[in-house]
Length: 270
Ligand SMILES: [Fe+2]
Ligand SMILES: [Fe+2]
Image 1 (tube, protein in one colour):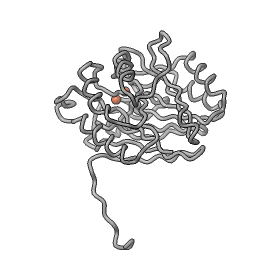
Image 2 (cartoon, helix red, strand yellow):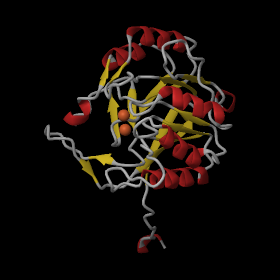
Image 3 (tube, protein in one colour):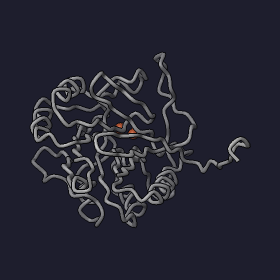
Image 4 (spheres, protein in one colour):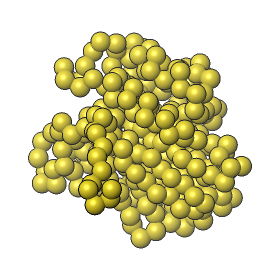
């Protein structure tokens, strides 16, 4: 069972670059090309699918993903427009159908199609607060999540904002209110295989003794690893995505950088 996680592609309108320097469409194109070559069971895109929630950016996103013939879960991030994203999902044959709109505006999923093949149930929690870059998971959302998990099925939870503090101050300023309460609640529930997120624009793993949270790097731009409280800084490190190999209750996660690095064989292995 193979789940590819691509996050934070931050797609711009056709022909536009992020900050005049990052071709976000090329990053997503390359990630999807590599991902499809792996024949994954699912492509999970964990938010900030476009940069400014604009219709022309969703049009560009559509042009990049419409030919993908693998089930795709499209999660909303703080840069997304949920109604526009919901409309795009409804129009793409391979996009997984979200849970019905409940009046909250949230875009959430309870995906069970992998269970019959021995894979996990995937629950997506929407952590976006419209108009803000930081996120929130309410007590009501946590209670609903715990209730869903009471069936005990092996479940992978996906959400945009990481529920932990990363140590990168300028990103933690846009963290997830309620994240610690979420993790405490998940510790008490059976079947939680882990949590996967985006938003940080950097690969990170958080483990609190019971729950493991894996954050995927962006396919577009990475933030600098600054643990000393400096200003918002990005790095020219290549984009990347994650490959989750799932076997029963175990998950092994690989990082696949973009940029087309070549391969070579050491003399001792020939
Ligand atoms: Fe992002
Ligand atoms: Fe984000």
